[in-house]
Length: 97
Image 1 (cartoon, helix red, strand yellow):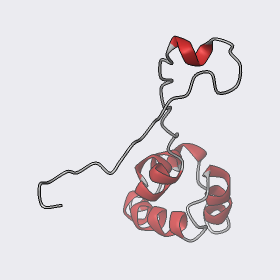
Image 2 (tube, helix red, strand yellow):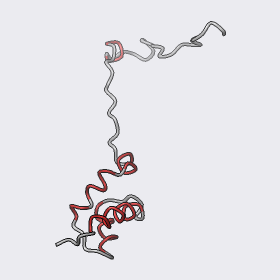
Image 3 (cartoon, one colour):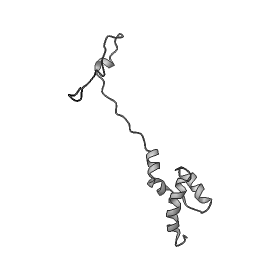
């Protein structure tokens, strides 16, 4: 059974408990809070889901799609039989230069 003012104290405790162990995962935060209180794991997971620092740090990297290569680059050939230029410059973006 929870105390009447538990939710009020919990909102102030959760932010402090999450930032002091350096935005670590569920278990270190649970250990940090359990040093003083007995808290269920289900109460800690929403803290991690709301933390913007954790969301940015643990965000999955974007997957770059593979490009379609021309047939000349996929076919076997002798060295320097087929050469391509990826970038030729200078490319002028304005008429000032």
